[in-house]
Image 1 (cartoon, rainbow, N blue to C red):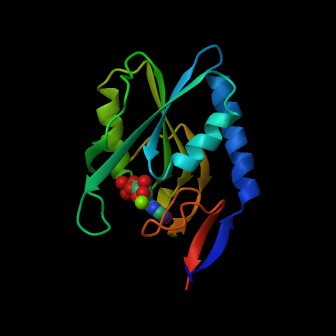
Image 2: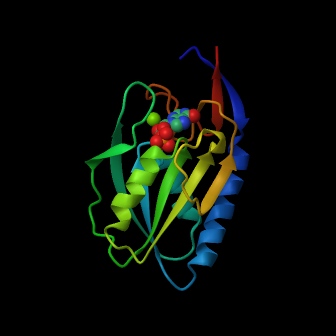
Length: 173
Ligand code: IMP
Ligand code: MG
């Protein structure tokens, strides 16, 4: 370890926000059910907490993608590393993301999923960095809009570390 982490969003605020998102989703889909798609690995913590706060029937599936690109710039050409276990045709799907940055990976992923003919397709993200957007994406549920800083915690990693922090923080050396 050895890195200094400054708290950007404390645990209590994240918890409150997730409860609020869970309430909104439960109201918006009242009388129906939702199929949550967790995009591994970053969204795993958010997905679990959110699912617990939704009061209508929930099913879960997982997928893992990698985007081809050079260095830190994602090309947006998505390669599915692990596909969903079940078809999504006719289901009310919500894609759960940890963070939306350039939007490249996500817009590609949404195209792939909408081709599978879900009844509806929505997007829920814990964090959004709107200043970084290159490809516009329509976000239905946003936890927090944050400035253009590299954040860790609550599923987000730096070199695979810090995913397990219960808050969102910034590495300061
Ligand atoms: P993009 O929207 O295609 O540029 O890529 C989004 C992905 O980049 C996210 O799913 C994260 O894996 C990663 N990412 C973007 N910003 C951050 C950050 O601040 N901390 C950790 N990972 C990030
Ligand atoms: Mg990552």
